[in-house]
Image: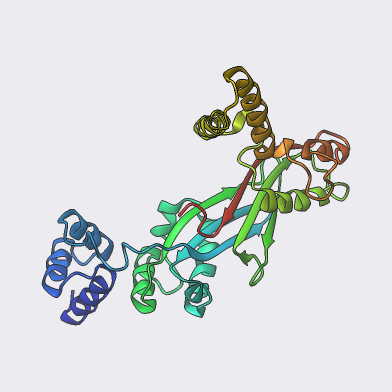
Length: 288
């Protein structure tokens, strides 16, 4: 590595970690100039524990979707502020990442090691962008829906550009007949974006989530002074309502509050029954 490249890498590493010149040089020497490994090296040494950018929360950013030949990919890239999420360099980076994410079937490990248009790897371009913009930026999560065993539909809420927004949902349906009932796919994707289901049906909701909700319900009822037998009956009713409200098929259809999603799917079934195979919803910063 030339002296110029070394100095440039030290500058980048200092920007990311907040660590001094000497320690950054040692880290780069140890890792043969690999910035990502240098960050890891400094963290293991305890030097970068309270670093500037690494300790910040990146809860803003963008979600992007890419569709081709019935296949659909989705990716979330986070920044610290909404101001950066509107930055042209950040948006251009996200757009290219969305293409690469589609090509790598939503595999983040492969994505990080993929080459971008400038010939550098994604992970190296990420470091350069962090250094240039001065904020923590993370490639948070990704997913991919192939075109087998069903038809994919997606919805972008409040798109800032085509296929880019803050909330995007994808749903895969079985039983869609082209030209006859595919409209239900886009509507269901919109419903998912608005209603935030946790699973397709009641049985699919994570047991830990259900147990925690039941614990809260029981504590609330007990604290209200209800007798134990009454409290047990009330808690059963409340947890049943919770399961319905958070399972897609049992949710109230956003476009007709008199019907459930399962009923709407039945009404739109033609030659065969429409079944939900899978779905996902990404909301920028959710759970960060």
